[in-house]
Amino acid sequence: MTDSGKSVVAQRTRLKICGLTRRTDIDAAIAAGADAIGFVLWEGSRRAVTAEQLARLTNRLPPFVSRVGLFVNASAQQVEQCLPWLDVLQFHGDESPLDCATFGVPWFKALRMKQGLDLAEQVERYAQANALLLDAWVPDMPGGTGQRFDWQRIPAALAPSIILAGGLTADNVGAAIHQVGPYAVDVSGGVESGPGTKSVAAMQAFANAVRQADATRLPA
Ligand SMILES: O=C(O)c1ccccc1NCC(=O)[C@H](O)[C@H](O)COP(=O)(O)O
Image 1 (cartoon, helix red, strand yellow):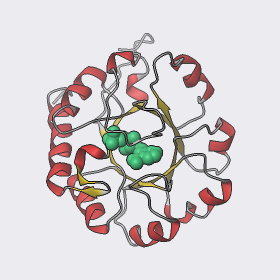
Image 2 (cartoon, helix red, strand yellow):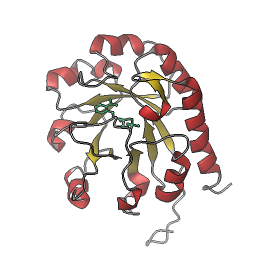
Image 3 (tube, protein in one colour):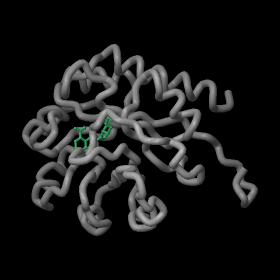
Image 4 (cartoon, helix red, strand yellow):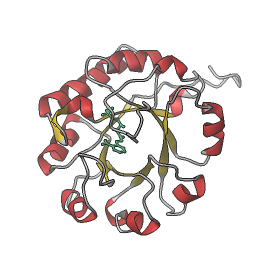
């Protein structure tokens, strides 16, 4: 129950599978139950795709799956050329709230949980975001690190609105869901057989672990 006495209905945990580069992997991610699929539009990533590849990869996808474009300090032109094939924008660089909001589509900001980060200040700064993604901090790696951060650093009041990322796997995502209770979980490296190459079995195992965690967390 909230302070206002309103009951808070725990929501099922949404799932984003990120860093997709092949149509076969996309189809498998959707079949596994991904609510969102992520494409890295930053050429410094081993999972990078171009706008032209994004157009081909997202051609005639089934409905009800959000297409997320990931950017790191991209120019407005670089983002705009991808908009026809995206539903949500994810920013991993030094983008200001105005930079993020300027495109008029839903967006979320990645906050890398460096020691000493003033999380409350960042939450206030990006208050207009549709969500915040909390990720590990690794020098010179804006995302996709395969590293966890201490989930206990996430304030309980913030947890139901965040997307939890960083080093998640089928083996630890259940504990993450039970400990944090995030709105969504986001995975890239933990479901790969190689850089940018997803494992169908690993995606299925990860999605099953999310459902299993919810089954033991949510009211029947
Ligand atoms: O995945 C990347 O290579 C990447 C590169 C630059 C910016 C963001 C990137 N990924 C963002 C994501 O949303 C990842 O899914 C997230 O960082 C978690 O990655 P992982 O720890 O490998 O699960």
